[in-house]
Length: 109
Image: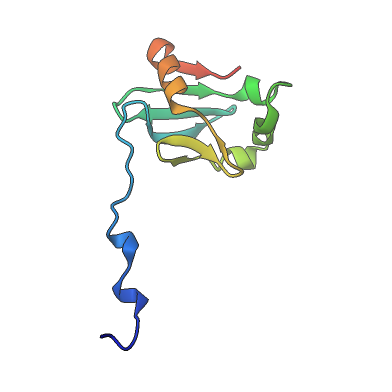
């Protein structure tokens, strides 16, 4: 029996592989563009632009009104293939994918 415990020897996060979303409509890469826009590339290679300026500056913006702050907007990142910001703000990647497949861009309204 072991007389002591060493947490360095049993790191469970090394056992579980990282979750990597594989669905075609999951976002693989996101980058900022001027004017509250984003460039996205999905797992299947589909690329397009997400236009958010009209939406976040509209009365319908709700919690997304916070993204009017360019500093916050610039903190965009990916979490399990979804575009996210601090404060639990995220965009549905499947809806963006459908629009971008049809027209090359997703304009949030």
